Amino acid sequence: MITLIQNIQELLQVRETSIAKVSGAEMAVLPTIKNAFLILEDNLISDFGSMENLPEIKADKIIDATGKVVLPSWCDSHTHIVYAGNREQEFVDRINGLSYEEIANRGGGILNSAKKLNETPEEEIYEQSKVRLEEVMHLGTGAVEIKSGYGLTVDGELKMLRVIKRLSENYPITIKATFLGAHAFPTHYKENKAGYLDEIINEMLPEIAKNKLADYVDVFCESGYFSVEQTEKIMEAGIAFGLKPKIHVNQFNSIGGIQAGIKFNALSVDHLEIMNPEDIEALKGSETMPVALPSCSYFLSIPYTPAREMIKAGLPVALATDFNPGSTPSGNMNFVVATACIKMKMTPEEAINAATINGAYAMGLSETHGSITKGKKANLILTKPISSYYQIPYAFGSNLIESVFIEGKILPNNNP
Image (cartoon, rainbow, N blue to C red; front, side, top):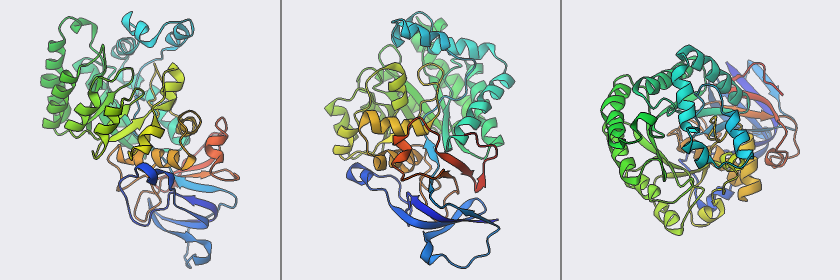
């Protein structure tokens, strides 16, 4: 099946050769071609260029993109899409003055979601989760990472990871699975934290590895959750079972989690709302991708990741949604890109780079996703007619997507 998209107003994120990521000043450079064509062959990008250089081809399908922009689909490297129910009441509690930490301390937060998940049958969790996955696909996401972490028991964590695996098998979107058993300490281990670490390391991880249920291991390294020492112990165990670390750090406090992540060559360190100069310094020269979650900051009214300082220091930045029931009940990467521009003062070029090529890196997908490059997956966004790609973050409340391509095929029933 050969698809030709022609007369594209502007083709974004064009990379002749595949690159892993962009950092520092390079983040402000977004290579594009105006009045372009793009050729898809089955599920891959086969050719692109200026319309004046369009080769003679026999296409099975021709799409006219006059006045429209084409870019790679979003790569969302941090989500918790698989969960049961919601936490609407906590949303109202925060409006009435309770903090995220206060809600957690009285049995809300992650423990609330864990209770619901363990009480909900696996089939029902799958049915709820697939609705969310379909929604984010229609919002332009073509690769997504999904974490466990609302089980906090051996059975609960395995149940979540089986659901993630089933979603991956049943949908064309690329899904990476992350084991986040160390999301919080369950109530029955509140006075025996060493006991829960033992359960994670000696019961959960062996089963996950045996059944090939995860790609990554994650830890919520934060005051009141998992200490740096506990985080290092879990990362070390995860690596021994073939899982690469990705960790939650610096959401509310800077306690040394970034340095621990770098020490264990974590693929990414995520949240980063609170960053000290030594945290930024530690990331220089590392292979670890800093990931910002601006819609979490928006929803919780907490500080935003200081992206300008980090980019000025020469670092890369990726953007992700943190889609979850408690602190970010949205998987809309378009809103994330807009919020990064509006609240974090990232330029549209930086934000698009962060949400495509750098997001792909944060999932280990640089070779197949995140740019318009020959041989990469034909996962694309075709916009409605727009004046320029600046309109994507500018018109933050509008859905400017006309079509989403996953594996070279247009998603059916794209909702406006």
